Image (cartoon, rainbow, N blue to C red; front, side):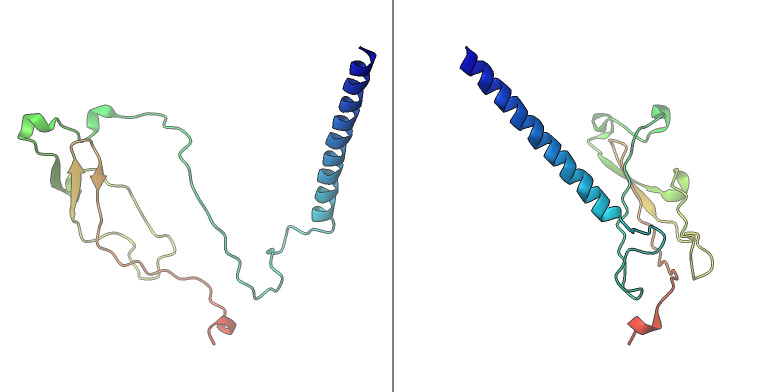
Length: 142
């Protein structure tokens, strides 16, 4: 019994020390990484280096779904018809604008049909060429 108790105490002490040393290493890494760190300039070695920033978006929640206005139907009632081409100016389309447009009017001027599935999916691909502008370093062009 005494041996088992001694064994349990030893294991507990070793685990505690391992956890503390892991926390110590985490704290040391934190200090080493952020010592003399300046968050103001871009994080590059040379100011002429390109910095790539990846951006993503995720849907967190849907607040409301207006089921009355969804474009859905039962294919059985329409001879098995599962898709329908509808002129895009007859249905809701998202208001998409390229804000740093370099070609004048950013609106989509050619209206095309949208492909609508019986499940309510709408595929709309307006033909458009988007021209944009961004600062360019002449040093990287040669």
